[in-house]
Amino acid sequence: MAEENINGSVDQKDIDDNKVMGILAYIIFLIPLLAAKESPFARFHTNQGFLIFLLYIACSVIFIIPILGWIVGLLGYLFAFVCMIIGIINAIGGKMKDLPLIGKFRIIK
Image (cartoon, rainbow, N blue to C red):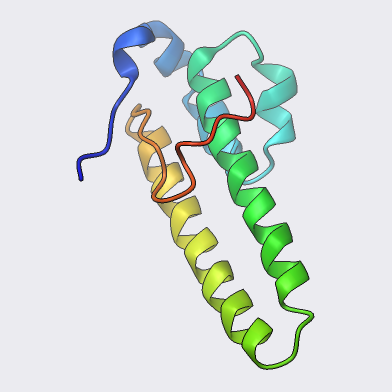
């Protein structure tokens, strides 16, 4: 399954000006949400970062359940970390690709 790159709807200047915000979106999603709210590139990566944040919260809740919850929680944490790395690499490359499994959801538009 090929990942969709929606860069066609964003101009190159916006991508170049907001790469740092795109990267920050995966570390602290609130900064780009407030600082670059007019940038489609930053908003896209902020949405992806927010989805990862929600996944971390879900894993934390699941982690409370002994044994099976620990296993599922750890796998979820690992998946979230891999998604974060993929997202940062996409932001550095100026790409707007959805993350695996969770990236298709749009909370921040």
